[in-house]
Length: 340
Image (tube, rainbow, N blue to C red):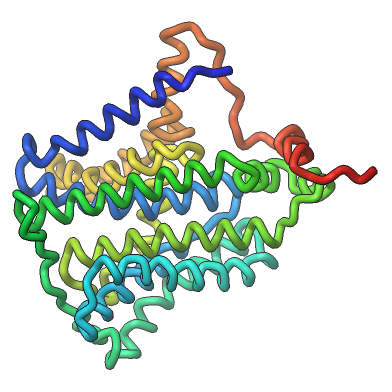
């Protein structure tokens, strides 16, 4: 059995870095890492849905929009605190995700991608139409999240720690979820759906739940995005946000939870780096960087680092995880009641 020592050490190191960052980094970096937390949560949803289950979604910006607007409307119109708004944003986005998941059962591949993309394209227009609730083109301005009196740091650091604490919780819950029967079913349906169904896996149930959980995570990410900026508008949640989330998942590593964290850092800071390299054409630099990453690390930054480490210590390279195989489906059989 593979030792969990290196994985636990990496998790501990990440926790330490996140904990001490406000004390050693400039204020603007700390602020940017609140966005990293929001993106990491949303990208994690894509990793569960697309990486583990094979359902391609180009509409996760819509789920982030729903989560962001639920938290914003509750805070702006009703004066509800964020610690109520965030869970309700998760519930609303999850319910909408299950609804979309039921519709998506009839679609697959590029057809599912186009359907979810149309959802992302339509969302800004929908938000602008119901201006009595959403504020229309002008959006909604929010009060800055304030730190409690017992917290010794300022409001920004308070929001930073809350965002990363929630990120840790949702990562842990997702890990526990996918390590059990649910995760094995998702991988089986991704790798060999016919074999999975023959072993009793219900594709309608698991695919819909995967969409729902993915939307829950996107809604939480959208809520923190709204709190960080203290403002929401339809232009915040355009279809470009959905593409950004998918880019983050692919570049970070769509087959591993670490890919969500690394991908969030990339999509947050790579545009700034591109701006520094060439202020006149940052989009060109950004595009070239993406092409180079896909050429040299097609399995994502995390996958490339894992291959590098295995090569340095002499371990055999693993086969690509997306190749169709029967064993994942067969592993479900141990959870099925005997037919005899």
